[in-house]
Amino acid sequence: MYRVRIGGIEGIERLLRERGENPVALLASTGLSPAQLRDPDQYIAYTKMAELLHVCSEACKEPLFGLLLGQRQGIGVLGALPLIASRASTVAEAIKVAERYLYLHASGLRLVLSVQETSARLELSIAIGQSPGFEQLMQLSLAQAARFLAVMADSDPYALPIYLRQPRPQDGSGQGVTQYQHLHFDQSFDGVGLAAQYLARPAHLDVDTLNRHLEEYVGRLQTLYPNQLEEQVADVISRLLPTGECSLAEIAATLNLRPRTLQARLSARGTGYGDILRETRFNLACQHLSEPRVSITELALQLGYADVAVFSRHFKAWSGHSPRAWRNNQGAMA
Image (cartoon, rainbow, N blue to C red; front, side, top):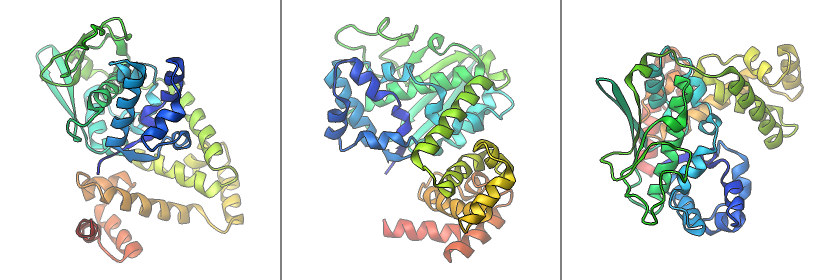
């Protein structure tokens, strides 16, 4: 089953209210609740998100609901992915990094970059088939991809051409309904276009945007885990591990604490940074080993290991099995 972070539909409640609809009722109709939206890093089935977008599109009588939702979202809806990608040297390299670590946000989503002379395009595919809501899900994904490319290239997301395989809405809506200036329907692929020259630009991530994202993140931590320092630390670790800069000092800085203060508070709770790091790595390893597209080498890097052999040795000490054997056992039980 392919899964996606529920943070990908950030802003859906507000959009529904603006359209005169009841978000609680619409969420409930698909088996979801507003409480689930409070933790953006919770995963749900990709088909469930597609179903919700379809129900919302029908209720609002808006065939471009996915684009309308996507255009109001910030880069933070992609979680840690933009921060990881922004460390690449160029926009082209940032796209490669995003493809490599895309499973952190969604499994079953694939990116393919192609370049022809002066133009380039980033094609998207979602492995859920033509289920109800697929068109809305693709619209939302394309809007988020346009935002990602625009942030990395320091350009305007609404000026990038968006290509959709879906036909133009029968009511004639399209250009003008959203802020996107170049919508192309009935295409042979789903994707976002950009000038090839952008690919050589240095990958960019606006400092103000990053700081705002971090402030919002810390606020969510305090809401999700009030007076639960261990859980807050584990959450921060899970975000910093892929960047290669996970350390006690970085975690303390994220939580607005001095390293010694953080150590003392954890010690008073009978634990420590090393204990939480091991537990978090193990939990993440088990989670991502269930994704067949994630190689064990990539997973080791994702968990902050420079050597896959060290990761394999640690994982066997934690679980009693090598990563490959654990994955095979899980597959046999599925």
